[in-house]
Length: 101
Image (tube, rainbow, N blue to C red; front, side, top):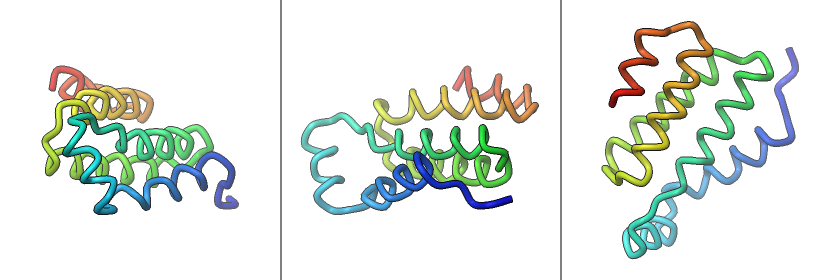
């Protein structure tokens, strides 16, 4: 299957800024971290386009990053997106664990 473009490519490009010092400084100063949405958009697109393994791997990477950052404004939606993906992948027990945090 051909590698997807479009929204996946844009999300991947935006994800490249996640660790940029100015972005991290903005997050630290403002207190709100929406950068994980780049991950969720990309992995949900991958799932819908038929790339479940890549979607799961990217979701895991997102969860590792938000765990390190420990910002509740990133953790809460990340857990929700993770639960949604795990449910779609058929891993219902893991989805429930993610949903209850």
